Image 1 (tube, rainbow, N blue to C red):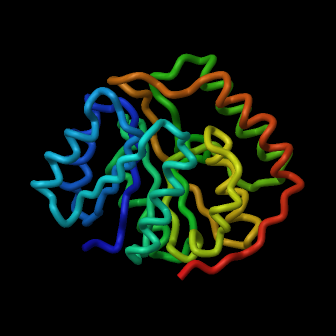
Image 2 (cartoon, one colour):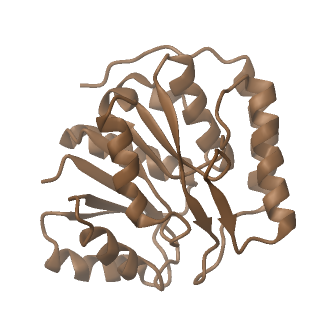
Length: 242
C-alpha cells in the first residue's frame, strides 16, 4: 500500500479511464488509485473492475448508485481515504486535463511542508492549452471574483487538481461542505485557508480533454457565483476525524 491515494471521480469516461489508470500506475513514485464512479451507463466501472485484477492492491472502486455531484463523489473518496490512513490524498480529473506526472510535484510540495498543494493554471509558470478564449476568460475572471470576495490569496481558486495532507481532511468538517459542483473546489480551499493550513500553488499546463464530454454547465457555474457570497459569511470550525 502506498502512502498516497489519487481519487478520480468518473461518469462516462470509458475512453479515458484505462489510459489514466495505467499512466498513474507507471509513475516513478507509487500512487494508489480510487475511482468513484456514478453508475456510468457507458461501462466505465466494468473497465475498472477488470483492471483491479491486474492491480489488486493499488486500484480501488466505489460505485455509487446515481450521479450526485462532483463534491459528493470527492467527499465519499475522502472518507474512504481517511479510514485507510493515507497520508497524501489527491483530487484529479480523468480526462488528462491534469497532467498525471505532476502528481509527483504536488506530493513533493506537501512532503516538503505544505498542507495543500494546488495544480495551478494561473500562478507564474502555469498555463491553459486548447481552450477557446471565452472559456479561458470565464475561468480566469471567476478566480479573480473569488479572490476579491473571499480575500483568498490563491490565483487558481477553482482548480480541481490538488494534494491534501491527511490532517487537513481530518480537520475540515466534510459534513458541512455545502456545494457539489464548481463551487465545491472553492469551498474546500476556503475551508483550508480559514483553518490556517499552508497552501501552495504548483504551476501546471492544463490541457482541454481530447476524449469524452465535458461536465461543465451554466448551472454549475451559477452555483459557484452565488455560492461564493454564501461562503463569505460562513464560519469554519475544526473537527477531528479518527
